Length: 194
Image 1 (cartoon, one colour):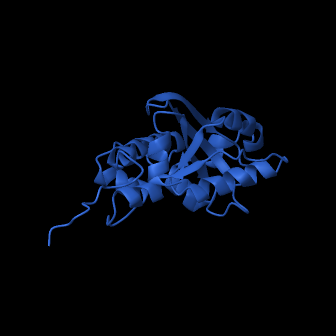
Image 2 (tube, rainbow, N blue to C red; image 1 turned 90 degrees about the vertical axis):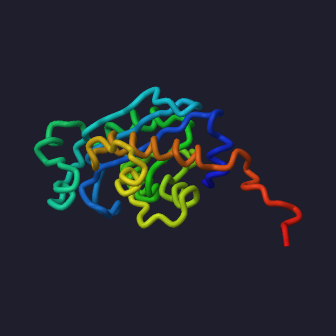
Image 3 (cartoon, rainbow, N blue to C red; image 1 turned 30 degrees about the horizontal axis):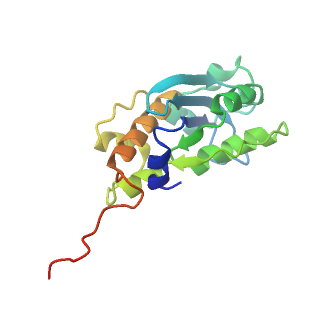
């Protein structure tokens, strides 16, 4: 979804910012171990959040555990991700789904939904990595934590799902603020000076 389209929807619909921590990077074999989601009102204010550790049913890879700080012991007695999925899907509702590098999170969401035979709702999706590239071209990195540092966003506990979702929500608001007020983009003079 383009920045212009997000700007059009801002103020008219809800957005739900989503982030997962996972057992690894491949949605075909790895699983979700933490769900973080933040629902924003049409004005961009946080109105609800979902923060769940879930049992992935497989060991968390050591490198993933080092990044997130989530261990097998932390998720051992939690409910399986498939059991938490209905709560997450209800939380998403019909809102615009927002994620940073959305294809990663949506790949894991689809894989988790397909295992028990569910489908992911066809909500519109906005990727803050793409929106930031559009709003702020030429930055050295568009990784979430790099953008948080560049813009002075307090990242909370980086690489924990709900904190990353909140950082992503703040980045979304910055992108919307940086977008032109109309979807036509910046105005150009019809008769430029010679």
